[in-house]
Image 1 (cartoon, helix red, strand yellow):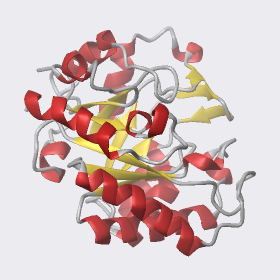
Image 2 (cartoon, helix red, strand yellow):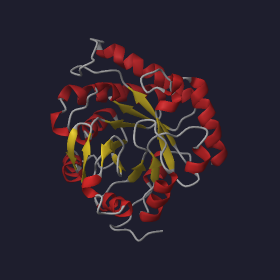
Image 3 (spheres, rainbow, N blue to C red):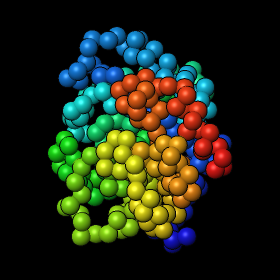
Length: 279
């Protein structure tokens, strides 16, 4: 195990989930109020939309759920995200948690870690996903900088220390050329040094397979748990989860593997059947 860069803390995945190799399934929300494709759907209907997927995912025996405003494309930069987004993420997450009894986290796109922390505090959420926790990159929405220094002070101000941070390294949907003089392993170390609780490694786009070599490098570079951030399916689960500590899964569990489609129980069961054999 690599030498820790800060005083070690307990394994966040062990604290949050009862099973090893936890599978965190995505609750993909439709466009929310203020988004370009918002249809006028009432907030109560958005909640019911989320609950339908949540109940199917629970029936498929996933380990946790992560609520995300994926329908709000094209995404805003963190400082542009409105209060309406945080508030809806909060009410949806609370209802999902109450309905399923599963651990719930929040991902606010894009890199909206502070709104996500607020939503977790209001809803009883247990973690947030951070696209750019340390360093910087060129995202679809433009130049995006590290958020750790602001987010951890915000979390401290709310005394929300139980809200964990799952942080991407070289997140999908962007160019990391501006920090290409620093090896991937060093960027993993940066995330640990900026006090994240878990590392996420992903492919190039939503649903794209995460390269095994990146997972191996991440595991060799930090004592923190490493999560697969995209592209897990029954065909590659054994390969990737033989190294990784868990995964966040969205697209595969939906009809035709499209992120905007409803969850299909048979797809959930087929993936979880493979995962259970690995535990």
